[in-house]
Image (cartoon, rainbow, N blue to C red; front, side, top):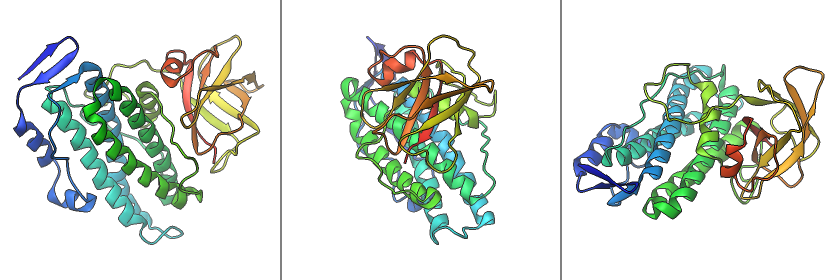
Length: 322
């Protein structure tokens, strides 16, 4: 039984609901993952904003879970020649851990009588082990950024959630380190901090992998025209030089690329249009590393990713700097 008061959802008692979420994953999955849904007590109340953000996390974890479960089957067929001998075992473990992450967020939502987000149908542009591992690193980086954001917002409104979120994001970071090294030949720990992105940005980055109109329930967020890196190509762009993006956004005026990287303030670089329709060029600002996120804007005043999200015209794009 839940009662909503002043933007807070309170629960008197619902132990069976938590147990039901644990039952959604098999003992085999729990064994492979190295553990199951946390059995510690949940807070007596959560804010509505926190529950909305957890629904977004549920949506993103569904995508990750589907991606890695499909990968176990596909990599078994593709093989792992040229990659570490334990690649399939690690991917199998990641797939199981993502199922636990899904069940963990579902347990919180169910406990507070908030709708769980069902899986959509997905489409992933991968044809072999190499393309899978490269996309895995991007998807995992988006997930890390989204969970950092959830931790940042709930640390003020719902600090009782921090342990759950912090323990999830460190697991995602370990996964990302493997994919960086195995797929891209890059160092596993390129920067001292990872990069926070907003829930809205994370959902927009996930959309290309979702089959249109296949989601039974979709979080209500603004959707932006896509933006993608055209050049330079390769596993990383480097930390300087010119960069070209493609976008379907039909915007005019003085445009900039807003860059988010690590725990730093946004950086802005001017945009120049190319002779190719739908393409924009800018420069990579110095001092960035690892995975950065870039968005098209027509202002340079936003001081954090939350404010920047409200001013986004297209994007964001993932940019592998190093």
